[in-house]
Each structure stands twice: as C-alpha cells, then as structure tokens.
Image (cartoon, rainbow, N blue to C red; front, top):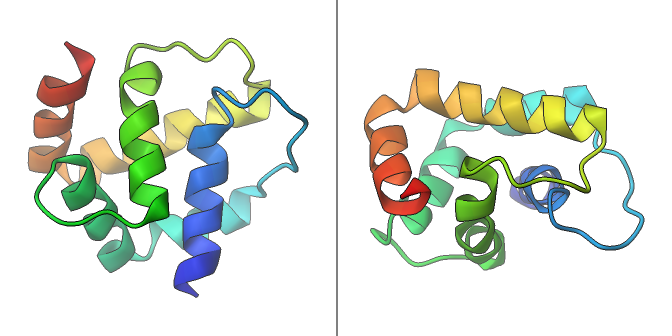
Length: 107
C-alpha cells in the first residue's frame, strides 16, 4: 500500500517539472494516498528536515520550492487541479507543518 501511495503522490508533484509523457494519476488514487495520514506525516517530516527521507520525500523536497511558487508550466489542467487538491489537503489537515513548509520553501 505504501508504495502505491508513494507513486501517486510523486506522480502528482513530479508532474510539474517532468519533461516526458507521463501516465495520468486518477483522482481516486490520489484520494486514497491522501487518506494515509501516517504516510503524509512521514513525507512532511522529511520535507521539513525532521526525519530521514525515502525516495519520494527526496523528490518532494526538490520540487517543493517550484510547486509553492506556482512554477508548473508543463502541468496539464488535471495535474494542476490535483496539485491544488494536495496542497489544500495539507493546509487544512496539517496546518503547523504547512506553515513551516511555506516558511522553509516559498521564500
């Protein structure tokens, strides 16, 4: 299950900067990944430098500044919607971590 969630989240965020054709991520697969709070918390701790990173976390740390600045010229409308959904989810459900991420990466 963790691998599936990791692939979904990585695909959604990585879509912003990918240079090659990529398979679409279904909205239901994204929703499933977002419902795994332990997985999300691990990725947030990685992004904040509070825990070791798995490959997905490393990729997210690389992409976080671009995504937070809205730099996603290669994103399709569906990918843009999914990225917005993911960021909104983190803002609502993990407000303290979100504030730290914004301070750390957006500036």
